[in-house]
Length: 336
Image (cartoon, rainbow, N blue to C red; front, top):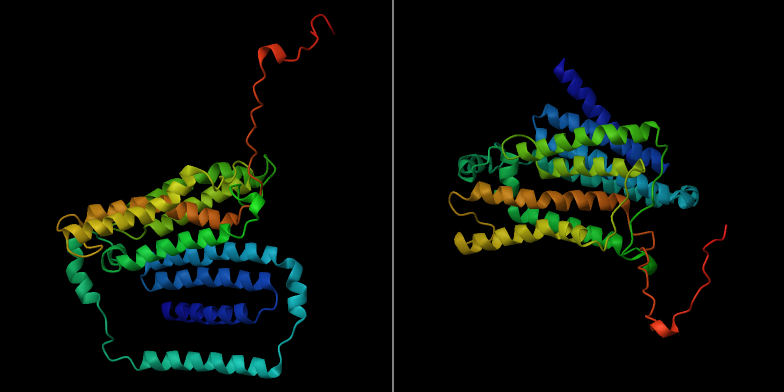
């Protein structure tokens, strides 16, 4: 029975992948992509990859789907013109041949792998206890592939800067995205009051448990960012100004602490991002704690988009007038 369910899920994944590629309507393609991500999460659960399943559900199906839906909304005005365009038969045939060729090449590469397939899993399992981290995913990402994780965090910050750079000059320093409004007695406002406390507890639990159990900073940050966006969409809060010092400090604190820990490792352990004996877990926890606000801010602000509202004008102080030159005004005393 389990094999039948797995086969059905695999066929649905293939069908959804094909649907997402060939769908002419952008909204339907994004909807197929979101469902594809959720089904892929179930497949990772079936393969006992709980961490990967959480990441796929949060980032692949959730955050990426939300970003694509936002893009579809902005492109609605040009979708009809794009849909009317038809590629030539030669172009479509070339695309099919290229896709089939790449797929065939990947299949041949997988089938050509030696038996057993090359893996570093035994070495990782042997050296993981030295890190003091019980979750192998966290250990790999922050001990054996720490440089990759550092670069991923930096890329997210650069992506946010790229989104901000598309703002008009008059809006620079202002608030990103529109100011949402909703019925204060509606279901959205009700959920925005009910779910965030639960989501914050779940997100912080996933963050804290990530050192020894499935979870971690990425999954936690996605949940916390989603709760923040829910409050904004219900009109109960607003996006922060991008020139706010605490916002900018929160965005850069993660990569800066990551680099500082790497330099400390170069000084104490002789290698960048190396951990001295007995200090691996505290240094990994320090990196995770510093990266959490960075990821929450970056993910939420990416969804908000580029600054689109003029920054609040600062009141201009009037020039001082000498007391002898100050104008006098008639008193309103006694008037009704």
